[in-house]
Image 1: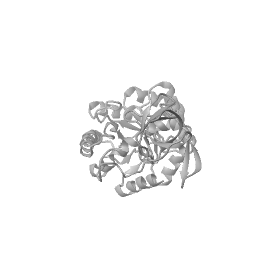
Image 2: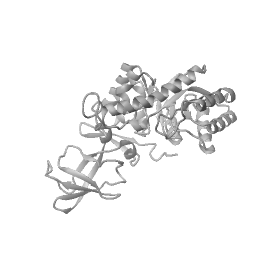
Image 3: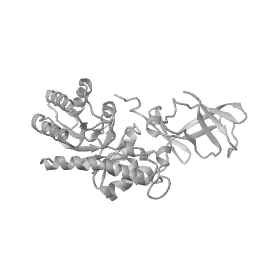
Image 4: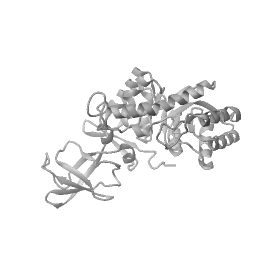
Length: 348
C-alpha cells in the first residue's frame, strides 16, 4: 500500500500519468487499487492478460507487445469491439493491415501507438522514413485504427546498477523517442501520448520531459534486483520497499552446516542472483534444483529447527509471481486476504 501511494504521489508531483504494468503483479485486485489511486490505466504484455483484466472490469488497457498472427488479432478485435479504451502497439505494416481487416469485419475501432526501438533491438522501428510511411499508411488506409502516439520502452536500462551510467544510457535511449515524436509532428500529425519508462527511470523522467505516461510495474512489490541499484539518494534504491516474499519451510538438514528448504526453480525465478532471507542473517541460499534450495549456515542470527518457516526476498518479482496461484496478504503479522494471481500463465 505504501509503494502504491508513493508512486501515485510521484505521478501527481511530476504531472506524468501512471499506467502500471500488470505483467508484474498479474492480479486484477491490485490493478483496481492502482486505478483507485489515480492511475490512467494499466499495461498488459500479452493479449491473454488483457482478456482477464477486461473481464475484471478494467477498460483502459495498453497491450505493450505487438500482435501480428491472425488468431491473436481476432482476439484483439473482439476486445476492441467491447472496449473503446483499448490500446495496442504496432511496428509493422503487416500487423496494421491485419488489424484493420479484423476491426472492419466487427465494425470496431482501436487506438494504437507506434512502437519505437530505443536501442534494445527487441521490438519497434527506428524514427526514420519507415515510421513516417507506417503512419501515413494508417492515416490513409485504416479508418478503424486511431493513431494516439508512440511507445518508447527502454527496458535494457532499468537495472543498470550505477546511477550515472543508467541515467546516461536512458537519456540516449529516450532521445530516440523524442526524435520519433519530431518526425511525426513535422509531418503534421498529433502525438497525444508518449508512453514508456519503468521503475528504474523515475528519477529521470521529469527532467527529460519526453514521456507523458510511465509504464512502471515492479515498484508495487520490488525485488532484490531493483533494490540494489543506485538512486539519486544513495547506494540502494529505497524509494520503494520490498513487499513480496516467498514463504519456505526448512525440510531437511543433511549436514551440520547445511539445511534444505522446499523452494527451488519452481518457486523462485532469477536470471542473476539467488534469493535472500528476510530478517535472518547468516543464511546463504544456493539453488538445489526444481523443488529445493540448499542453505549454508554461517553463524545464523537465530536458532533453526526442522519445520521452521522463513521468508525469502525474490531476485526478480515478475517471473516469480508467475509461478504461484495466490498472494497471502499480511498486515500486522496476520493473513488478512487471499488475492488470486489471475493472469498466471497468460503468455499468449
